[in-house]
Image 1: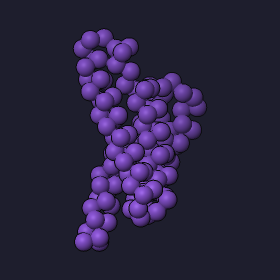
Image 2: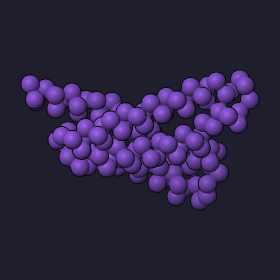
Image 3: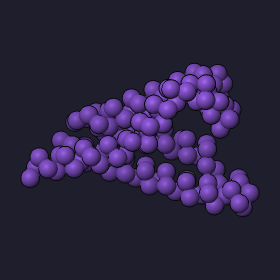
Length: 130
């Protein structure tokens, strides 16, 4: 039974990592688009450097989350911190007009749920060999 629990925990971590993996791979495949997205959402410059950092965080954090032991905790923490910062930067529904505010509020709270899931993954990794 313990082996089955380990498989389920890995599958749960894979589900948590999937949006970051997909986003990181997509951004790496279309780096110009990733650079434009960083510039458009945040205005941060030099946008190519920040786009490369986003890709590294998304793919590196996902790899750590899918590993075993302490790496899981580190990957979850990296992805949670990234998600929190990105959520406040990109989905500031309190600054949007009514029509856009609902969409951004929904996405904002979906991301908060994702952060909670990453927190649970980190907790489980700290309390058992995930």
